Image (cartoon, rainbow, N blue to C red; front, side, top):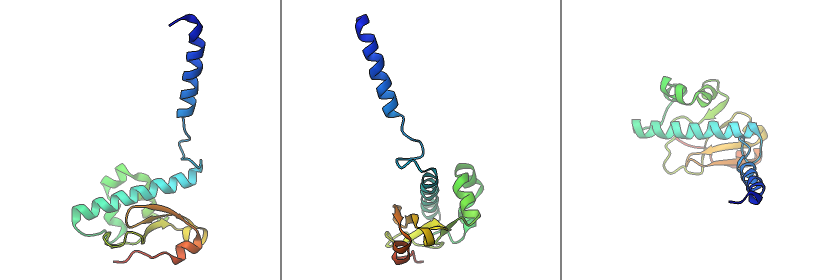
Length: 137
């Protein structure tokens, strides 16, 4: 490589580094929305793991708020324990893919992200949430 190309290489590398450094709170840049996304993803994972290991859905918060889950998912276990997030306990995950399984307590009035029983997280307005099927036991 010749000396005349080094400044060009430095500029290219700098551009690549800047382009690769995305906002850690998500594409929208909203840290609250990113937190909701994280908590709902963790609830989905914990709920699914519980169903697979116990051959039945969790029936109450204590089923997911275990020492092991607290160590791995402290944010979501605290959110469940404090009832900041509402979970449809006892929901069978099969056949309810589009039913609301979990959501932040503000969603019914303000809209926001909801976890569907099929594992999808979707943004809903308050009106969409009111009309959405709710998970059933």
